[in-house]
Length: 76
Image 1: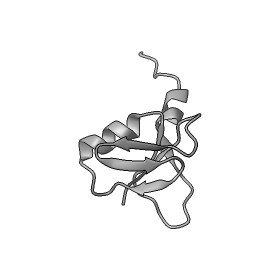
Image 2: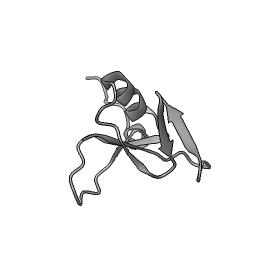
Image 3: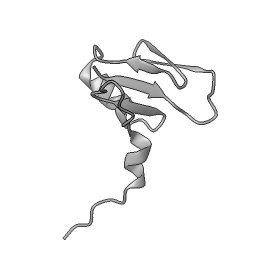
Image 4: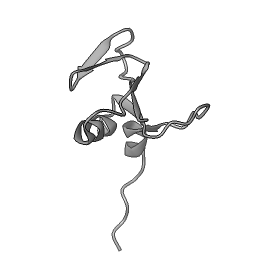
């Protein structure tokens, strides 16, 4: 099961609608039945956190904003 969470700064208590789905700010939404291209688009969006394979009790989250913090790989 994949899941997504809308976490945009300054948007507390708001709901984002994307691809026909509602994402209340801060709440995990089951996205396992979303089209792969829609899931990929939202996973790359810095306003969303993605958890592609959540396990019960796991706090690990992959977010687009964390990926942006890494420096690009250097070419050799």
